[in-house]
Image (cartoon, rainbow, N blue to C red; front, side):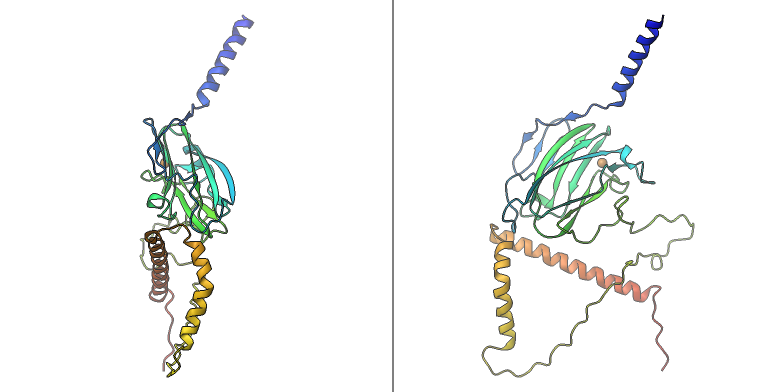
Length: 296
Ligand SMILES: [Cu+2]
């Protein structure tokens, strides 16, 4: 009888172990469709893989790193109000690092580890993307660009990012932090349970740090300059000579089309930043921070 009970306990214990350890399928037999796109017929996919092309501005691969990222409902438990999460919310690497990501999905649904904002001449649509349907593992490699920039990493399945599956990856020192990264940064629109109606002006997010407007020096009065080589020309030439080696390095190995695409991308980013700044200023002036002007 004692023997039977202990045997039953053993069987029971074994079956519990089998149930709790979910079987993770390794998607390591994917078909290579070219251009960094690999997939199998079983829900595993890699897009934007790049194992050997150095991004413009990288002299060599600075470091070779491997990370394992888990995704699943259980990782969201420590972040109230979320449903899905990665097991890490922040990553940081040296510029020009060759990075291999092993992505493990522990849920019975589809999840992705999708990185945005990469240079489009090298990564289609500026993305590096790992995807697994159901419990499984998929691995992919990319080479991070040079420069300090913070990249968004998320799961693009509807509502998965909004419900917590979001992270940021800093290259070098990174740029500004992204909002509402669970456990890392504050939300742009924090949850409000006060019950008062939403006011689009008063409730609009205001930058926590004061917006510093750089002083614009007054334009110099155009002086009549008779000399052939004006001061402006000299300054222009000087900047050109200083910037040339940097530009040559930045655009090394790119075709003319790629250089134009990269420059346009930078210009668009610059215009976007200025528009954002102007928007914030208008909001500050027209919103609650109305500056009372003294009577004459
Ligand atoms: Cu997901």
